[in-house]
Image (cartoon, rainbow, N blue to C red; front, side, top):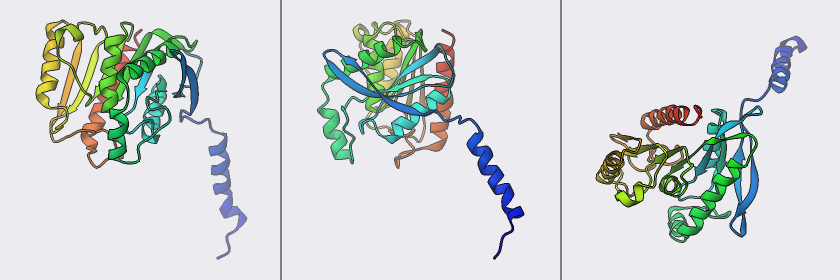
Length: 253
């Protein structure tokens, strides 16, 4: 079928306008920074503009720093946060659950904690970051490390924990200065509700700001859209609560 030039003109015009329009999608880039005597790499995404902006240390699941976690960093940057996704596995990404289990078990906790503190320091040293508005967010293994960073860094301004490993002893949690948002699935066999309630109870006993949400019918990794355990309604509600929490705790700084 022959198509006239006049019929094609609107398509050409649309394409030209699309190319000319400014992109609203945040783009990321690899960055390198010191962690003790080593140099490590992360994935940094910055909002448009000069800042200063609030910032987040973004901590991956046991799979490693994969495309899904990078997308989470881009989503957070689109909301106005400088997002640094750390790479605790130093370049390795698991292809399956067996490899993820191996990588997570082989990760030295002291090195991971040092890398997280280094990520915080890197963000605090950037000109586009407000130094009083740096938080952390993590999923699965990264959720546990989001709490670990709150235990280790008194300047952390907020900690978001998606179904991460918890502690509940008073001596440890007394070190937490950041408000905490915890998001968990009622059917999570790895992070049982009883342990979540114990954590919440100790935090409240110590007078620490804590907000906990447990989703019925959701299990572990309910917020990861690449996994069979994904639950859309719970994930969307958790994301809305995450953005509201970060707005209150970081953007007010």
